[in-house]
Image 1 (tube, helix red, strand yellow):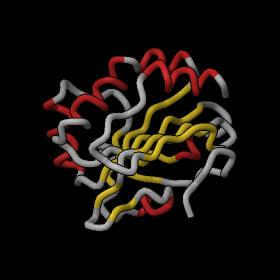
Image 2: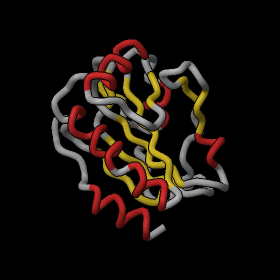
Image 3: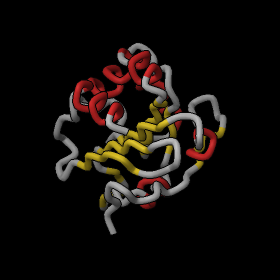
Amino acid sequence: MPLKVGDKAPRFTGKNLADEEVSLDQYAGRRNVFLVFYVKAFSSVCAVQLPTYNRNLDGFRSRETEVIAVSVDNSFSQKAFCDSIGGIDYPVISDMGLTIAKQYDVALPGGFATRAEFLIDKEGVIRWLNVESNPAENTPTIDEIFTAIEAV
């Protein structure tokens, strides 16, 4: 069943590119989480999406929000992709088994996840979301995202 605003966000733990555990729980009570599912390393939309979040990371953090990106790529592909787009300064998690994508109901046939963004507040409640029916679609603008964060 698709998640909706007001639902408790599923808890997750994954490994970042430095092989360190990243979990929703580590931000509980302290930071909002902007959870991003990106379709595939080296895809054209993702090559714009992730650097946009990185360029605006100070804006997220000044709004007490941490960005976490998730894709089905293995960590080696993700690292090469992140390096190719100038580096990413927020956690990027490999979800090859689609465990997190299935929890958030964004898994697609063929072993992919659709493009999706979830704003999760400090109490672990989904306050805003955007799930693309077509993963090739563009993502919400930074202004739209920051407006959603400021409404929390």
